[in-house]
View 1 (cartoon, rainbow, N blue to C red):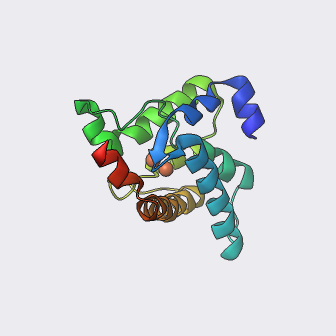
View 2: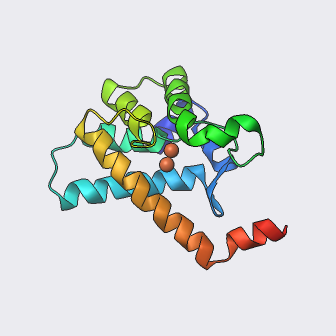
Length: 149
Ligand SMILES: [Fe+2]
Ligand SMILES: [Fe+2]
């Protein structure tokens, strides 16, 4: 699926932007897609598997470095789901399920909750992965290094 996204649009640009610690947005999205599958299998959920993976791979397709100290990025948490969805729509043919997944993945920070099972799974998987990634970066002293530098 990554091959399809890479050949039809700028998916690999996700490798250029850092998400948490030293992990790129690309790595984060692969991590989240894997976690989505784990959760759905563990809970025996009847999900649309193809949409689940695709929506997870595209959920942070916002295509900028949110660590840059500019005013607009201070509200990145609230605004990036819409940007990611717009980019996904611009570059790929995405289904309504995938659109909802991308748009709603930051709930409850963004107030409107997911409206399908796949989006709920993504919402949970993203939070689990984020906590794991941030804790891993802290363990490795990456944030301290950055503050010094
Ligand atoms: Fe996100
Ligand atoms: Fe994410």
